[in-house]
Amino acid sequence: MKPNQRPCIVLSDYPIKTMAYQRFLSGLGDEHIFALRTVNADFTELTQAKLVVCDMNIMVEFEAETLAHLERMFPNANILFLEEDHSDMLVKFSNQRDICRLGKLAEISVIHSTLKELLLQSNQKNRRTPRARKDRMEQT
Image (cartoon, rainbow, N blue to C red; front, side, top):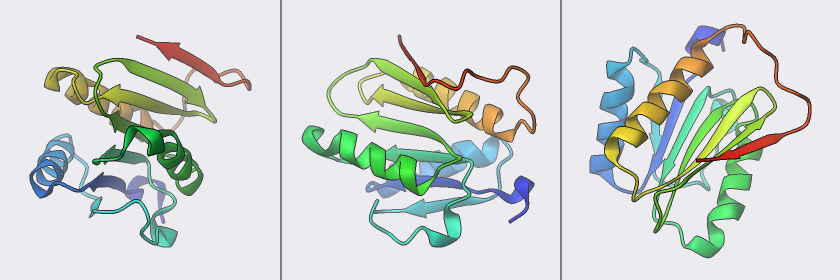
């Protein structure tokens, strides 16, 4: 797959939210968007994704395990993972990518701006400042 054809993946169990994410991403100029309704699908063809959005009903007890699964399945993708029952954001900078854990209670403008920034970063060919080898985490 060519670098400019790396897809975005939307994982959501709500069709309305899926369509909203697809429309938002296409409005930002991305044409390669795949929508899936389960995290257990066969992602073999899509492992080179540049952005993964996961907005599903996942029990709080399984959120960390699900996020770890997505990190393994999409080793180069920026990830926006929406979590239940809070509005905080935790950002992990790892392996030249960003993994954002954001509460579903956050304002829609925060979700949109975070998604826009993750897509923008994933479209950059060369990052100007390489990150330290050690993983960093920031909480806002």
